Length: 325
Ligand SMILES: Cc1cc2nc3c(=O)[nH]c(=O)nc-3n(C[C@H](O)[C@H](O)[C@H](O)COP(=O)(O)O)c2cc1C
Image (cartoon, rainbow, N blue to C red; front, side):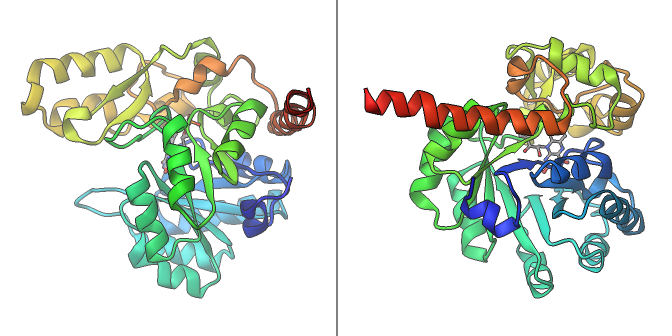
């Protein structure tokens, strides 16, 4: 299948693995790229630019296909060493960067001068148009159903994707709620050029996370995610658990008086305990509503082949039969 994004990134299938904190290590990124998709290493999971450089080298040893690095620009006072991370990406010869969070404009000149393609993740048409205007090569449009940060406008993909298609000239990936061949065909129908998957790729054999995390996704339904940090305008969709219920009780009790410090125990530094130690109630971890569509833990290759075969069968058989009837 050829789309503007398979051409832009030099990949075989229009399938991208979004950056995921403490999930997007070299093992997963390489597995996705080797299966013909675009794997992405999560930059900030590596605590220093030197560690990111080493992770890029590890990934390169596992695949000779294109892969990317996610750079998430956080609204923090003590910013990570972003110039160092950008240098590690460029010097590591990485050709694709997925940016997310704050406006990536300050980093575009250096990345573009090095020939790096930038795909910026947005949760609204307004921000997607801004990304286009500042010169991003593509965007990932993340609907309300997504795992992680869906923004504050709460527009689900059935509306957001066709709205993005109507407004944008640059190619875009449909992100949030993408699980299978049906998702891919729907996304293409809406005008997208690829799908970006987060949660679905966690429940794969190669995802370097504890089995408890994969099993929690398989066991969950579409009713099991919650939105946290709404009062802080930093909304995150997470899997419900004991820590999340505690956090939501505090949000309810404190209302507008809630400060980040009140919920620090439930959100700060919890990812290694969850993803690596499998302590499922240690804190809040991002998870999409798509958990309700995830029932197994295939290899990345099996998953990608299945998505492509299902999509081709829907287009070539079911849809063709309908129009020819
Ligand atoms: C566990 C987890 C961690 C994530 N961490 C990040 C991150 O560090 N940076 C980022 O830009 N997006 C992050 N995301 C969002 C994903 O890249 C992707 O946009 C999202 O998962 C798509 O929605 P889906 O889960 O419904 O597929 C994360 C998602 C999950 C599930």
